[in-house]
Amino acid sequence: MEVATLATKTRKVSARQVRDAEATKAQILDAAEEEFARFGLIGARTEVIASKTGVTKAMIYYYFNSKEELYQAVLKRHAATFLQAVEQLNSQELSPEDALKQIIRAAIAHELTYPNQGKILLHEAMQNEGKYFQLTGWEMPIRFGMSLLQRGIDESIFRPHNTWLMMIHIMGVITFYFNAENNLQNIAPDWEWRSPDAIAQLTESATSFILAGLRN
Amino acid sequence: MEVATLATKTRKVSARQVRDAEATKAQILDAAEEEFARFGLIGARTEVIASKTGVTKAMIYYYFNSKEELYQAVLKRHAATFLQAVEQLNSQELSPEDALKQIIRAAIAHELTYPNQGKILLHEAMQNEGKYFQLTGWEMPIRFGMSLLQRGIDESIFRPHNTWLMMIHIMGVITFYFNAENNLQNIAPDWEWRSPDAIAQLTESATSFILAGLRN
DNA sequence: GTCTATACTGCGATAGAC
DNA sequence: GTCTATCGCAGTATAGAC
Image 1: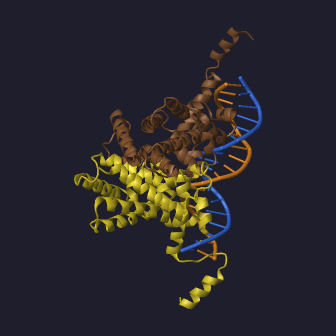
Image 2: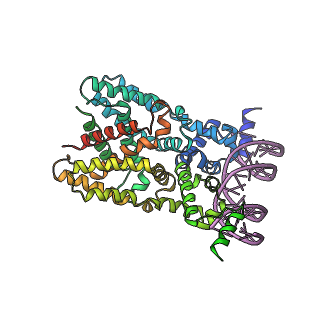
Image 3: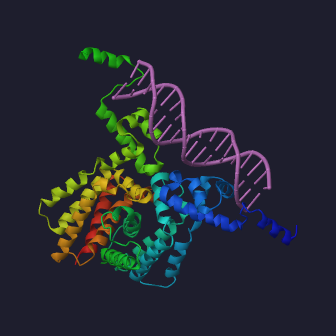
């Protein structure tokens, strides 16, 4: 079939949207990410994902075979991005303190760029028992953070501590703000959670709190 | 009807379990708490709640009218307990540092006694947009914590900071350990999350981290 | 590659017997 | 107060036309 004929045919079928396959796949993943972030694997509805996307439910099954495989694809999606950001810092030979500051900044930036990933991860823990956690690519950055803490202890910059628990504390400080937002806005209705000013204050507050908690 | 006759009848109807109404209600609430903690309002299944309870689905509607009202009842259930624990501390005229130490201990104890409440709260934030947050009774303890931080600042025991953000940091430190457990056990399979030893280490680690992060 | 139509199951909620 | 039976809709997934 000639190209011209195909293009004509594409236009003719008005009700049927013919599109780039990769674009459709990405759209489904975008919508799925939002839906899984809110409801988790079990609570999410394929119908809602489809209607947000603009294509039909059948497309989800055409590209991803099942709701569960779609979920896995979403978990894998940005697996490498945060690790890359962290690894770039590693190559800069920063002091443990400065490296940690940069990691906190990068983690908050990551939450803002991918506001769904953290919530999906929590749903994965709470409702899916962490079954697919490994797909998310978070193990390496966490290990990296622990080794950074250890280096700080060895250099007597950080006081001695259990790096495993400390890493959990630090992750809690950074993520709770974003995950509990909808509850806490009931208490502080005027706080603008995502405004640049609020984020700047959060970054400053979290950084000074964490570093003060670590220093020798 | 005489008591004896009633008792006999109770035993005779073998397939039909005749029980104390309050006990049945409490059983439903127990099962519902677990189910909502795992799946949230939308993901939870009344069928599962019923089968865990040992009574039938119809009982849920008899006592609670709807899934949503059952959910609200669960949210309200232990609303006052943590506040009471905190208020007891208030009456002891402790220093801000000691009071905070005791609150951290109380919060961790609360997580262990009611392991579902924290997760329900997070689901409430993430999937229900905090619609029923007020029912949980957490506003007062949070406000109390903030005033304690302010007192510490005024007495120059704590360094100056935004008490709202600091309170969020502290809650993050305490809750993340429990909420992310199922993900993190993939990284540290040998860590025994709920063992007395692990909880003791968590308490010590969180306390020293938080206080070091606050001190002037 | 995308759509419509539909099979089939799960689930919230109710009616009515005991 | 508890059960059985069932209604009606919502949800996952598939078949088949285009």
